[in-house]
Image (cartoon, rainbow, N blue to C red; front, side, top):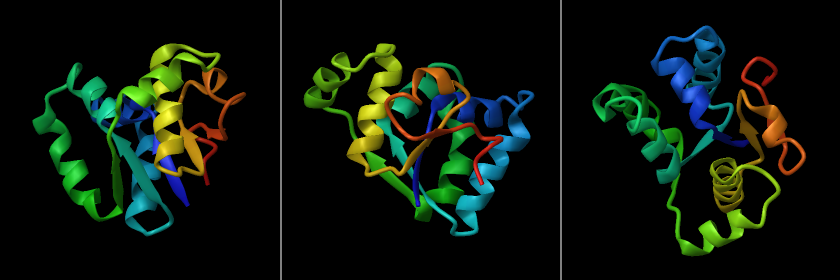
Length: 125
């Protein structure tokens, strides 16, 4: 299974927020070869606007054999404008599709679920 992980799940993990154990479980399942992670440069930019890249490096290096990197382009930006949700979330949806993700893992279910198969980290099995 290919999953796209929304920025808020990464932030839970990196900032050790309340939902961090659920985020950790998603990453651990990747390490155990249950799924691959679609990672976009859009998500990386969102992350590095909040935390230093050096703080993310260990996780991404550990998971590098399970990550499929997807780059955003102008076509993706235009497609995102057509989706009925917030633009930043729409970009994640477009990039998940571009990476052939089976589902998006997010804490923000309401802005994704009507457009793409979505799970919270707590409900993802």
